Length: 429
Image 1 (cartoon, helix red, strand yellow):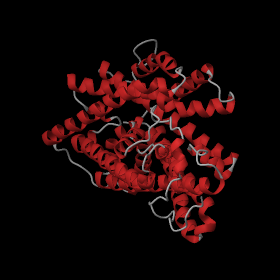
Image 2 (cartoon, rainbow, N blue to C red; image 1 turned 90 degrees about the horizontal axis):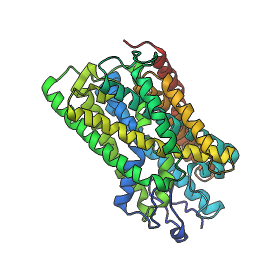
Image 3 (cartoon, rainbow, N blue to C red; image 1 turned 30 degrees about the horizontal axis):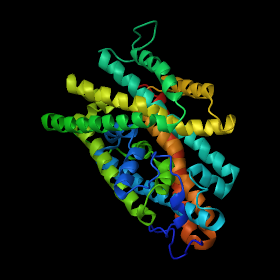
Image 4 (tube, helix red, strand yellow; image 1 turned 60 degrees about the vertical axis):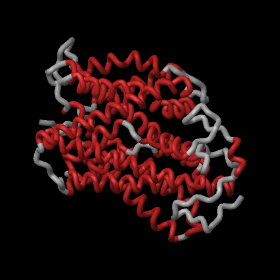
């Protein structure tokens, strides 16, 4: 089958998907062989994108101002959606022109099909950095939150053998993470995923409700625009929040009505964008200049507050091995012949834990990972792959918009990374 030219890659309508695809297995997101309905697809989009990044949005809004923060969040959401669709169109074109329908199942497969080993290496490298970065932020959140809950002292104050509460809790999680990350397949992790998602939704909903009551009581002074100097910081945090670019191809593969996947993805991204905007704005509205890098540490004492913070910690604790799974797939494929390797997995967990010890601020680290890795993975590579595949067919209609995205991504990556590193290294009051 030839990719029809009238179904231009510049639009979000997808060409008819080959019927042979229905026999493909789609094990990445579900154990069921049945393809997903629209509702289940939106649910899977929600699970794939919503993560710890949203917890840093209130602090980002404090830095950028709430109007600028919302504007950047929705702009980033649009570009993320657009680049996801670029990946879908690129896979359709490559599959229909060069190979069988079931060959390209992942972002890395697409990179190899378009650019050979270099393309796969670029995607693998960025996926390892991004997924490991997500997990570093999980450990920072868990250790900082537990330290805040259990002591009135600063989480950096030494309390035992010269170690701070934050460090003690991080190393306390380490042996349990070794056990969880020894589980070889996603199938066995599915119950943990369902449990973690349920706890996550309940905890974040409780945070938003608490924010409303605090805002109505305090009504702190708010800033709408934080200035151009924090623009790249805010963009980096927003990019991090939309962390699901690597899952879009598996999501599309298991969707029943693939011709309408673009519309379903757009609806899902729209809902998530509104929820992210509400979470970030409400958190900043509630606490104003007192908004901390982890919004839950702003919550006052009490049983409800403790349950919310503990619930988010539990969610991220059990999400950690799920997010590390793509890292293990790449590392084991490249260094151990795609075979399960326990010591290699444990080594990766150790490295991630050591990095988490060196990062002092949760939100600053979100901005760093978002600006450096997630921008390249989410914007630059999809546009480059799309341009390579479609440049002869679409000419300047492809080269110009894809080139703009690549240039925009590089500027954000360089500037945002530099600003985030300065913020991490600078002393905090």
